[in-house]
Length: 162
Image 1 (cartoon, helix red, strand yellow):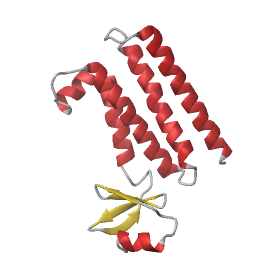
Image 2 (image 1 turned 180 degrees about the vertical axis):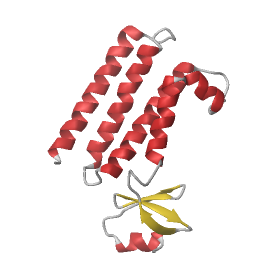
Image 3 (image 1 turned 90 degrees about the horizontal axis):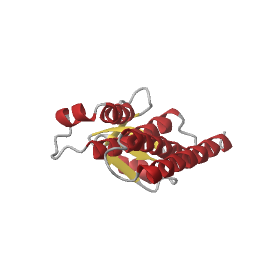
Image 4 (image 1 turned 60 degrees about the horizontal axis):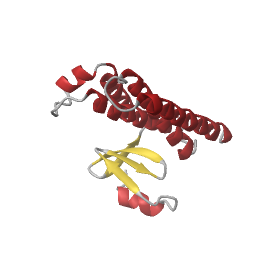
């Protein structure tokens, strides 16, 4: 076991460490941290956090009223806002899952795919809530275009790295 600061000093490729709730990103790898010590390397199978992001996001998309009553009890209830926010929560979960699943794939490809999934769900959120306001005639096509372009860019970046 080593201290995070010791590990940073040993790794010339590492420029920053992000530590959040017992997890650290260090030189492109995810580590589990206890009392400031690295105790293990995380993987998609071992770490529930990526799935938690996705599950919570899907819950808010599918049943925003239940999500609001159970977890997000901030008044006033706003279905559109909850669904929009949670689309990006799912995107973050996808980024984390892809990074853990394929750690050697460039971060740009992973980020584009995760953002693309979030953008696609954002477009779906606007389709579902088209009667809640906004300008569906222009918003929905624009959000679909953003999602498609981001997903295509991510897929091209992913395949170019293979």
